[in-house]
Image 1 (cartoon, rainbow, N blue to C red):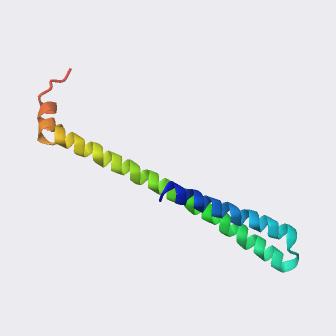
Image 2 (tube, helix red, strand yellow):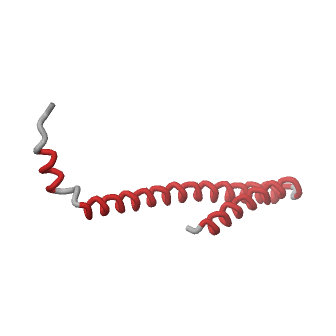
Image 3 (cartoon, one colour):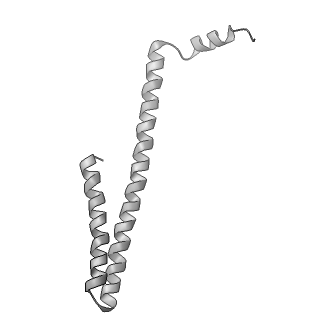
Length: 93
């Protein structure tokens, strides 16, 4: 998800909430209440979904960084059998 698309999505959610507030003020009766309820619910629900997407993307980025670090250590030869031999050769203090 690009930063531009993310901003656009949050903006749309905010616009829906504001539109629900405007409907509450301007439209009378059951229709006004229904529009208010639906627009605000969809806007806040969309914002909540976007927050969870952000959390998921952050976790994916962290996993990618860990994988990159692991590959870098493997290239340097510090993992696997060599590391085990180094640790076994140490004497306890």
